[in-house]
Length: 77
Image (cartoon, rainbow, N blue to C red; front, side, top):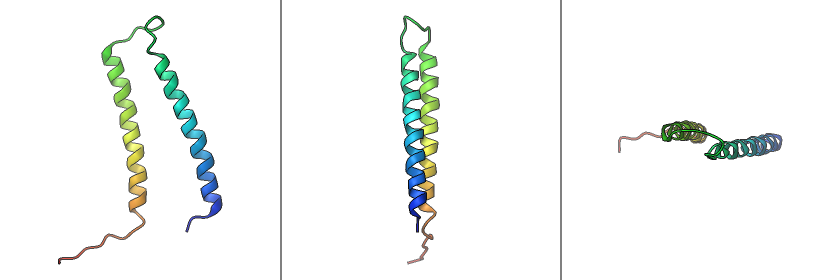
C-alpha cells in the first residue's frame, strides 16, 4: 500500500515537472514567429514527431507500471 509521503513526493515532483514541460512547450511554440525565425515544414514535422514519440513513451511507462501490480491469469477454458 502506498505511503502518504510517497504520494506527497509524487504530487510535488509531478506538479513541478509538468509545469516546466508546459512552459518549455510554450517556448517551442514561440518559434512559430516567422518574423524572427526561418524554418521549413520538415523542421516542424521533426519537432512534433520527437515530442509525440516522447509523450507516447512516457505514457507507455505509466501504463506498464499499472499492469505490473496484478498477476496474469491463464486458463484453457
